[in-house]
Length: 330
Image (cartoon, rainbow, N blue to C red):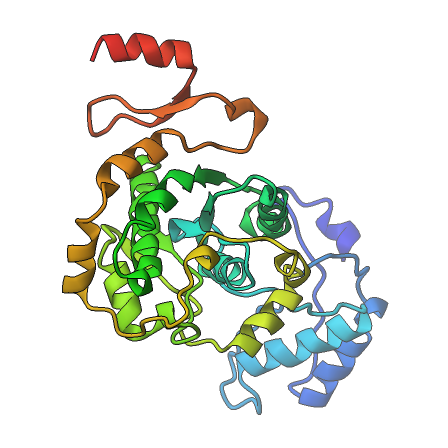
């Protein structure tokens, strides 16, 4: 038949077909021995079945699944389980407050799983532990389209102001509000529409419902908390799975630990917080901190993050010399 069809004009391609009895057993036997009829050499395949006889004992979808399973088994093809979720970037971008603890890297992974590309900001008061932060971002980079966009923010000047607050049990709450404000400012500069944290409800005093409400009230953007209902065992198990647990355990004194009170407040009042914030010059301090934030990559060292006056203008990194020239024209 093939030699005959090869001599007929008007035929571009053709395939050999075999006529079987209207019998389920014959069909299954044929597929079991398909190598005897066709040269099977493929990476993927598909059964496209349409029944002209609707009285046939199995419907098209069932046949496609069962016959496909026979071929896959015969050819040694195995279905491998993927990570699931959504492709990174399809849901937008988020700025995560990366502390260096166990929780925030797991939060980053969960955000990536829902299609968000994650950039990081890390608040520090000593440079010794920054290798740990960079290592965490590098460990997560395969899940994040192999990117590790990190912004390091020196908040040492903020500590002096926070220490002047009269009620020490409120200092950590106010510090976290300042971190939220700084993160929102950076996110808006980078045209990112949301920030995220590794908060888990009631895990510590500053993560009670009342505490989170007061802290997040300082945000001008959506605050995502992917671990809000997780307990510590679940978070640790996830951290071990993505291999960030060992890195997170490395010794590093984070900023929040410096303001942990002996008797923490679990139900802070918004009115009290706003009154206490008036005791310090926080707007000026945050503005100075923001101007000095830095990107850890070598090519960004010593550069300033600036944008034009128009709303649609993009933020770019420029050298100190160019920044000085631009300043004279503004």
